[in-house]
Amino acid sequence: DAWQLQVEGVRQPRSLSVRELKSLGLETVAMVLQCSGNGRAFFPSKPSGTAWTVGAAGCVVWSGVPVREVVKALGGVADGGLYMTGTGGEVLPAGLDPKSVIVERSVPLSAMEDALLAWEMNGEPIPLAHGGPLRLIVPGYTGVNNIKYIKQLAFTPRESEAHIMSHGYRISPPGSKGDPSQPSVQEMSVKSWINSPLPEDGGQAAGLVQIHGVAFGGMDAVKGVEVSTDGGKSWQAARLVGPDLGKYAWRQFVLQARLPKGTHVLASRATDARGRVQPETRGENQSGYNNTSWADHAVTVTVA
Image (tube, rainbow, N blue to C red; front, side):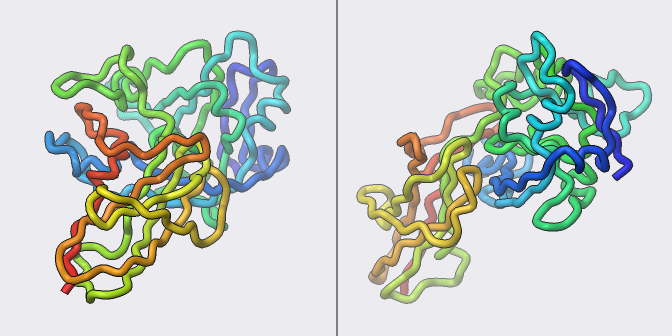
């Protein structure tokens, strides 16, 4: 409760403790927290970084004070504020340019409406590994924009000049380096994948199979999911099952299919509430970011 957050770029800038933040409001949001490199392993160029397939994502329930309520209590955003910029509380190594190592990210001001300053994760105080005691939560945005142990929240006329913002996490053409002219890794888009059956499950008996997985829309709710058992030649509508935890959360889906003996390529593709469909192909980039390709995420299973 003693952790301090400095709020700048508002009409009444000041430092607030977590204890004080807890008096300003409370909301809970369920959202997909996903590394922007989730799916990197499917890039044939083998970009540097962890070779994630689908493991760098989860659906998390956060509780905290809405950023909009904090801003309201401090008189509103000051003139000229176009970005919400969060700065992490890591102790910076001596002798280095702070901008070269500091974790500081800027997102559009519009992201403030659903953002939280959260102190609770899945009903418990946020552990240090996940950003406690206070984390900036920006629903619909990739993980790097959800600043751990946030120490400053500022509303700024320009994006942060920190290297992690200006050059890191940019959608750079293959063979190039990131720079401020390239798109930043921020909003997530519609995506799904199959969790079962998988090739490593040890074989599947012929007959009825429950093909299931998860789907999310990033900034929008999932409208529906289709599943293919023939590598995308034909598609069948899957059922959404389980609770609907809101537009930023993922939905579980299932298709009951009868699979004969042989090899089958199973794929899923989701559609969001705006009608945007998960693409077949990935967007090639130097660092292997934002892979939503249904073809890459397809799985090949052998039925005995």
